[in-house]
Image (cartoon, rainbow, N blue to C red; front, side):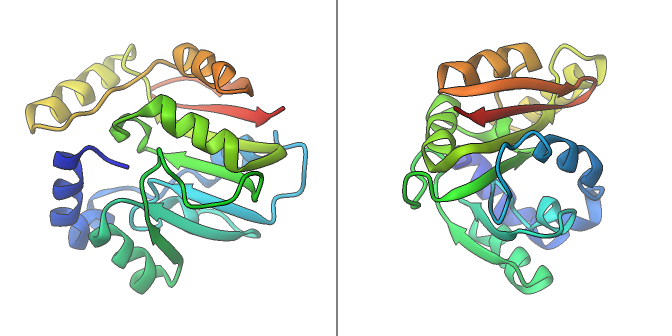
Length: 191
């Protein structure tokens, strides 16, 4: 899921992560999930770490998927969420087996973003939605975030919303840019 260096970082900061990070934007996630053309009963929160995004959602059965075992332990113990250690580029789920996938504040950490998009498209049932919330590197605050993450040695690769939407289209998803700004939301609906 995360590049090797990033996994170690998140394993180390897991006990303090939720103290430093604000809650996920549940309204933005719900607005993204509203684009699904099917009921959402089963959702994967890929790169879900401590379960911040999952905690902002209600309704579906949620499984947090992350490569950081330290972060997953926070999701399991702190939030009592189902968690699975796995790589976003090789999701251990059947084709068409979930209704939605979220990637919140984590897409820029994925070492093979195109493989992660292909895997999300593969596990989504037709009409299911991939909702990505991330940070825009073209925004002034985004440029600061990029510089900060690279300064501490992260392998982050940020994409602006239009570039992510084009990559979703290439992965067989119908992309929609839901909102823009420092934090943005792009949704891809499985064709």
